[in-house]
Length: 113
Length: 109
Image 1 (cartoon, rainbow over the protein chains, first blue to last red):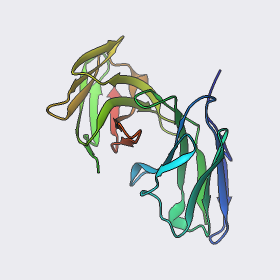
Image 2: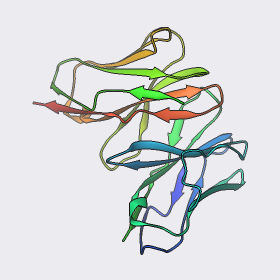
Image 3: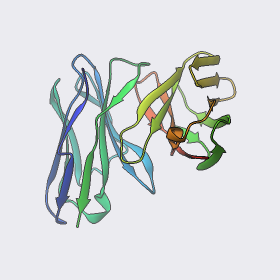
Image 4: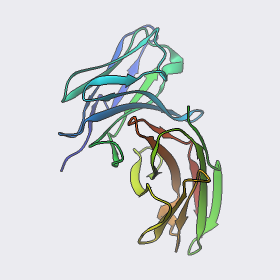
C-alpha cells in the first residue's frame, strides 16, 4: 500500500557533522512537508513544497538547514553543521492536494551528541 | 501567521466521553484536521472538517465553527488504546498545514 518512506529511521551523530534525511512521498502527491517534533515544541513546520517548488521555509533555521526536492520522488532535509539542539524526530509528510489528508512517514529520529 | 490552541493534557475514564477543543486564527482557511499520535509513532488521520457542523466517524466526531475559529474532537466509549496525543491542524488555501501542540489524553480504568 502507498506510504511515505523516510531514511534513516534512526541516526546518532556527533556535533558538527552533516546530516541528510531523505523522503519519498506517496506517488502522485503534489505537496511535501518537513516537520520537526520535540517534547518541548510539538510539531513544527520547517518547510513545504508544492509541485517541487519551495513555498514556505520560514520555520527553518537558514544558517544550517536546507531543504530541497530534486525530483518528484525525493525530498531532502540537510543539517550542516548539526548541533545537540537539533535532536528531534523529523517527519516528512505528503498530501495529494490542498484540503486532503496528510500522510506521514515514520520519522527520522535524530540524536546529536 | 497561524495560532492554534488546544489543552495540554486531559484525563478521562474508560467508557466515558471526552471533548478536546481547538481554537485557531488563520487567513485563507481551507480545512481543519484531527490526528492521533501514539508515543513513538507518526500522526495518523482521524477526522476532517471544511464546512461548519459535525462529522461523525464511528466513536469519533469532529465539529467546526468557522466564524468562531473553533473545533472540537469528541471521543465516545473511551478505550484504553485511545490514550494518545490528539493534534489539531489547520490547512490554508496556500497548501500550508500547521499543527497545534497536541492534547495528551490519558484514559484510566
